[in-house]
Image (cartoon, rainbow, N blue to C red):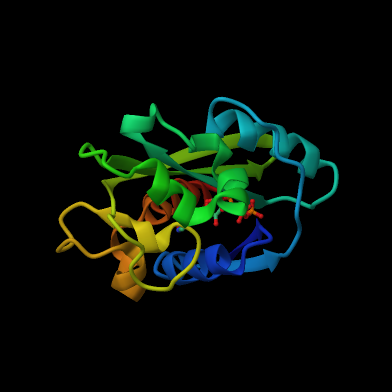
Length: 187
Ligand code: ITT
């Protein structure tokens, strides 16, 4: 089994990645570390900045992941500022901002940054959906207010483990896993 380190301070993210990457025969080792995150307009910029910082501290190969919830009627807010917004106004605050707004489409985006053989790579995954009218279910983060498309109107939180079948994180992890597996086979 191949092994990759995942640097994250978020245990939920780690568990999701572990479950998904197992399907690809990739073992994930958790490095529980909070690292500096730049405030920038794209998740890719945030990830690349953090990778350059971590490269001096962590032995490769390793990856990180930055996620953001982009609400279309709010022009993509909170997007790259999702962590700050979740810590400050939280799901209740977002629901308040969305009160009376009919256009509730949102994109949940995940960008993985990988360091391998001294090079940096990014992989992006996205899931389209809607912001719920009220919080439903009790997973973590924005899960109770995000309804992915074509999943019966249930929120990520209500979907439980089925979140992993359709999530933004699954899509970025799959891209990285297939790229990594091809690379390992060639070597
Ligand atoms: P890191 O140490 O990996 O950076 P983090 O929790 O700070 O962990 P992010 O900056 O990527 O993670 O996440 C931005 C915010 O979005 C944060 O408040 C998360 O709780 C939330 N979030 C990220 N992915 C999510 C998901 O799959 N479901 C629900 N909320 C999510």
